[in-house]
Image (tube, rainbow, N blue to C red):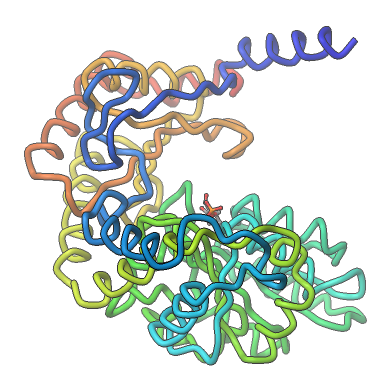
Length: 402
Ligand SMILES: Cc1ncc(COP(=O)(O)O)c(C=O)c1O
């Protein structure tokens, strides 16, 4: 019976152009990688600053292995809390100007653990419609009342806030930079509404940490509202080039999470070498404005060129640049043709994005060279002309389901 089910589901996914298959990367994670045996330009990683294969991070990890060995042996609350973990937490708190910090093993686990331990069925959470799946899962697990406001739409949020209701705690939660759209949450306005309606605010800085703010501290610092945000979560797996995640906030918040967040308590601590590499990455990020500038210059160059070709890059304002194609099969075909011409950009399809919103999710890196960007733009232009023609996207989408 299970086999019948598996076959039917897989066939349905294939039919809809939604079957996901993994390719194998056999090089380090740089702006050029070897995918399924072929060297390609990498335009789909979250390794925005190119730190994932930086020798300084590798050296920090190796030095830590020499001091602390490889594994952490247990969860943080048993005997797995190693000095590297605490050094990392102190480093992040200092960088973010926060009272305290706790590190989780992944961003997914951080969101699920933070939200489900702080909120329950007597609370209400207002969440941007396009927030990351880990935020959604955290809210569902918490059993709090779940209100989804229209994406970045402060009128929609305020209408919901006005409805009020007898809730013990209220919280607005948003991604800082939206992972599939590359646009930015209006954090200043969210903080104003939170103040007016007595809500707390939680942000997910996954794609903003290392990318935004004067020294890469994130979007809260960019808007100067960091003191108004109660819960600042972020990942170490994207611009930091490492692995893991953090939550910054008050001493009380961190103390409660350590006691209650199940995804913190019931899992083995990160290997200490990962923590050491993250510390090194934060040092590099803080000292290196030029790296961030290169990233932003590259993002602007590509976004403007793609818009010039007539492609829809949505409201991207960051190094995440979507190319909206709407139909899943079209996105897949586009991605495959790009790969054949030496460019790796994955097709993003439902359920990661909403129905009829399939796209290429292109990300630029600080380490892309001008000739890489020009090759990308040139190839996209050629493939778009073949697959879309002029006005083809619109017509296609009327005729075909996602
Ligand atoms: C906005 C956002 N939050 C959380 C996560 C999860 O982070 P991690 O990959 O460290 O689990 C991601 C990554 O996919 C993300 O894009």
